[in-house]
Image (cartoon, rainbow, N blue to C red; front, side):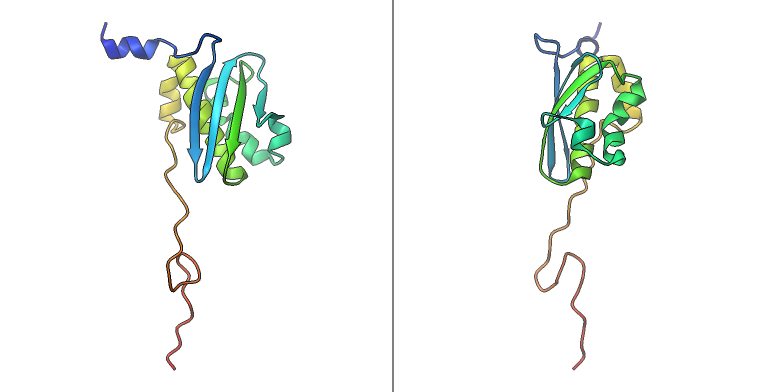
Length: 143
């Protein structure tokens, strides 16, 4: 058995059975702990439904778990900071996907195939001098 194959099949958890991963999106950073349980998801100490009021961010958070059929099998604790609700929810989703791949190695292939383990590199474009915004220009006047 090859060394890399042996490392992939072994789950990477701590002594309490928790998998830890970090997800990032825009300016948001999410630290995620995942452990086998009843399916509770807490974000910054609040239940997910209380933290993300809208449905779209909630669906983004649970998307990796739905993909592998692990919804209701794991408890998730996440500490999120920075950015807005979209960035925070997508950072949390990336953290959950990474933690799922660490905790249960067979989940890695379907998550990678769907792009759940890939970080979205898009960031806000910086404002340039002599312009009101990043791409907006002042009105040109001939005289």
